[in-house]
Image 1 (tube, rainbow, N blue to C red):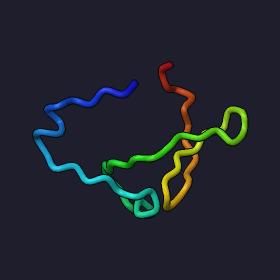
Image 2: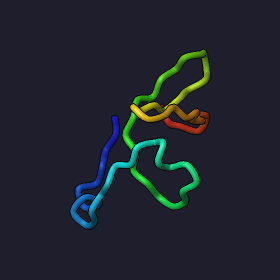
Image 3: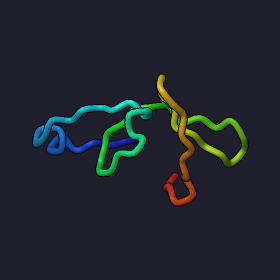
Length: 61
């Protein structure tokens, strides 16, 4: 379950970016997508514009 700080959203304006728009960008961005697992042990973050691999090796379950 994800928890977001109310203070974070009250303190600034947050814009959700499509994954495809992140190509060549630096800095912090907010994205929203679906985490999928097409193969065992290989995860992707997907939205309507793109799919990118993600490394969840250090995530907490």
